[in-house]
Each structure stands twice: as C-alpha cells, then as structure tokens.
Length: 138
Image (cartoon, rainbow, N blue to C red):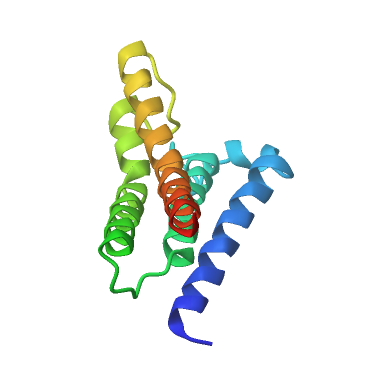
C-alpha cells in the first residue's frame, strides 16, 4: 500500500470515529478534554470530523494527473482541507468560546456559512467532475 492509501484510510477512520461519538456516544461530548478546561470533547470531535471529511475527499481525488481540470480540482480540495484544519479555531474565534455557543446571530450565520462551505465544496467538485465525465462521453 502506498502512502496516499494510508492517509485515505486514516482520514476515513477519523471521520467514522467522529460519527461514532456524535451518534452512538453523544453523552461523552459534553465532558472536558482536560480537567479544568472549558474545551468540551464535542468541539474536538466535531473539528476532527470536519477535517476527516475534507481529507477523505481530498485523498479520494486523483491527485497525480496532467489534466488542468483535475489539477484545479485537487487544488480546490487542498484549500478545503486547509480551511477544515482551521475550522475549530475559526469556530472558537467566531463564538468567543470553545463550546461553540453563539450569542451573536450574525456571527452564527457566518459560522454556518463557513461550515457549509467546507462540507459542500468537495461534493460540488465531485459533481462537476462527474458531469464533465458524463458530457465527455456523450
């Protein structure tokens, strides 16, 4: 197995573990990561889930290709992965706390938009790739 496959499997594992904690063991998400801190485990799990999601789609994409279209798609997914790696910090800065509890409605809308962008961008890239392949065959 090559390094890309290991990274793909690791990102899928991180994503699945985050989903496990969110849907199967949600009672653990309110506990602090470290005793005496105000960082709930749920914030860390969500952050890892968003990063695992972005990484999963990045490593699934054919990265080594001479096509300008595929190179552009790989760059967009790399940018998305980079943005996902800072999602937790961005969320904490917008919320003003590590629990991601928002008091300002405008900042909450900015956070929702940022999160939706990170989650939807890989799907849009893959839809465009699929449409290009479909129309190329016609």
